[in-house]
Length: 76
Image (cartoon, rainbow, N blue to C red):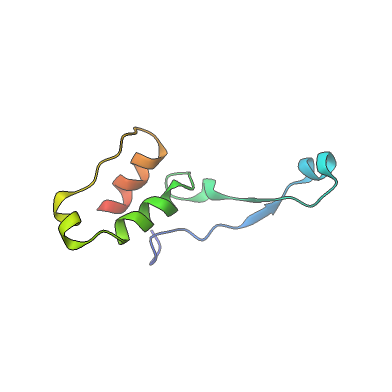
């Protein structure tokens, strides 16, 4: 876990999309986040913006996927 709670991920130039589009296309490597998903950014942001009252009530995710994993990781 990084100080900010989010891994700084790099961008990679896609050679295959360049052949299709004729333009340089870069892919953000969010797969390198601890949960393997970009959902960590949104979950962390939402948790950091909770009021003290909201924190007392806790949070839940209507998901068993990437968003729920990110909430679990960052809520601790």
